[in-house]
Image 1 (cartoon, one colour):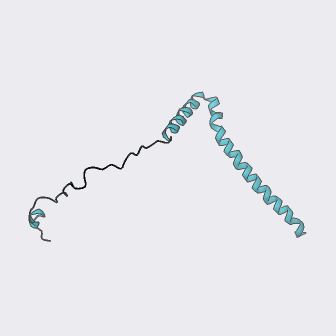
Image 2 (image 1 turned 135 degrees about the vertical axis):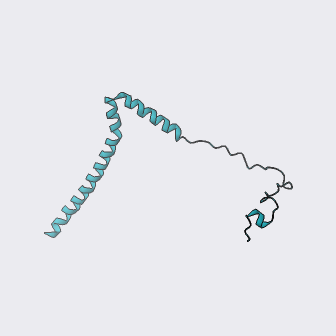
Image 3 (image 1 turned 120 degrees about the vertical axis):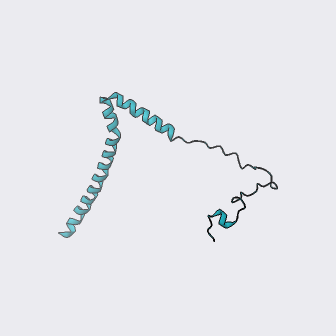
Length: 100
């Protein structure tokens, strides 16, 4: 009798997987159709959805970034001097009389 139950178990497992896939597809289609079904009762909502989708489409469009560099900013011989750390004062004058 156990050998006869094995095909039934594999069929029931296959049926369960098929049912889960079918339900997932059904829920996906329902989620896609629901805004349109609601929009049939409220056309203003369809207009709002349309404008929102249009703006999202424009916002996420690929933008071309023109890169025209690298540029050379001045000559190799003329370099700017490094910034100084402050006036030439003794250590204790700069730090309030504290010694290092």
